[in-house]
Amino acid sequence: MKQIKVNQYDAFSRKPHKGNPAGVVFKADSLTDHEMQLIATKAKFSETAFILPSSSAELHIRYFTPGQEVDLCGHATIASLYALYTNNMLSKKN
Image (cartoon, rainbow, N blue to C red; front, side, top):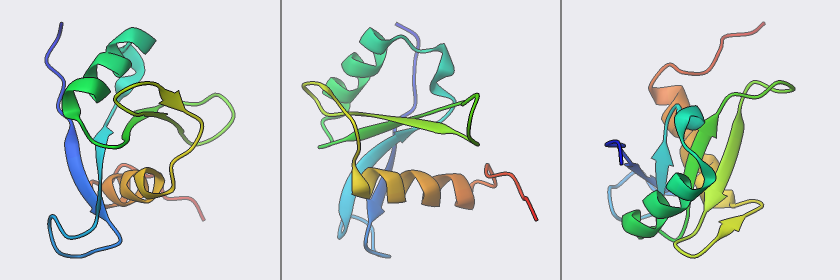
């Protein structure tokens, strides 16, 4: 499998390892469902978020626990948006 970087972000805290940790994978559009599940299983966060392009919105986020895909995860959403913002990966719209 290709090497993928899983970034750790701790939602709800400014101090590392004091918040609610989530994995965030940028530019995940080249990954299959199976690969996302394997990455989430190996990362061992309660949820890992995968950032994907969207045809109907600015982005699409998929969430995987170590055991399955889930529809939504609050702390992983906050972690993803913070990660995108701090890495200048959100478009600047007026």
